[in-house]
Length: 140
Ligand SMILES: [Zn+2]
Image (cartoon, rainbow, N blue to C red; front, top):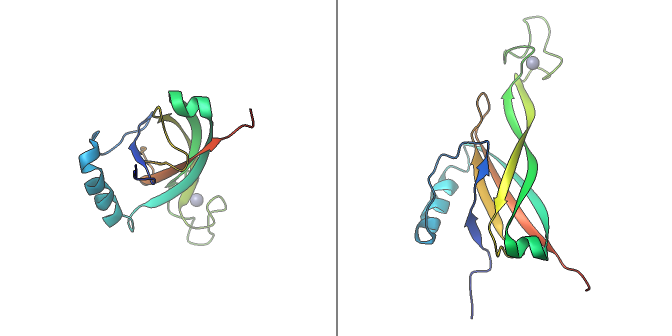
């Protein structure tokens, strides 16, 4: 039975705000199209998690850090003074902050599935995160 192998799941991470509500499978394509339209606007961070077969079948929570682009604190985002660029951000006014999130992986997730969510943290640019799931196979 042919099923969509490029599975997408709605997923949620705590400690962050997500700017779209939970949606059912039927509107998933609509949401993806919506996100696609906005792809040029936001940063996207792609990463991978490795799960055991057991965790993948039961569902699990994975802790990870995502890089958020925030305002450089030492120069307040100005990038330095008139005479000197800021040493911390090399004059960009941005700083990368590693922001911890916990990703709730749904039970029964498939190898190669992609989990997408958005991080909207205070004082940082919105970030789209795409997590590819790799399931560890064992010889046993
Ligand atoms: Zn700076």
